[in-house]
Image (cartoon, rainbow, N blue to C red; front, side, top):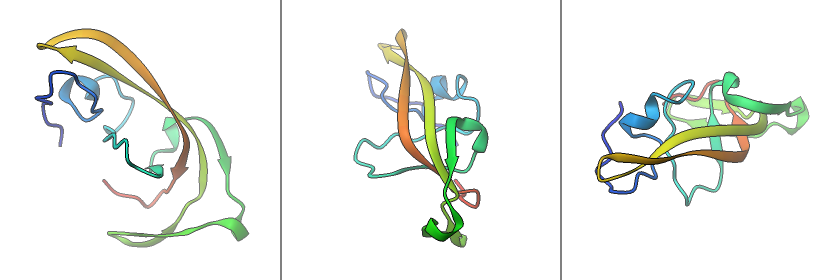
Length: 104
């Protein structure tokens, strides 16, 4: 699943180095994404459930499911230049939506 990032400045959280510092499945960063999702409740540093009457239906490759909640996720990754780690960064994403039926 993970691929080595050939970019001289690693900005993807799906690179081989970054996978080792994440608590669960690797994240794929897309700076153009309008919303961020996870299926892993354990990734949230803060979380709030969405009331049943306010849940949004989501269409996935596995069918229909609902956004159950939202919160904040912190992601760690390493920045490399010329195959050398030049710094470690922590990113703050909020809101991140929790969809238990989401698959990678």
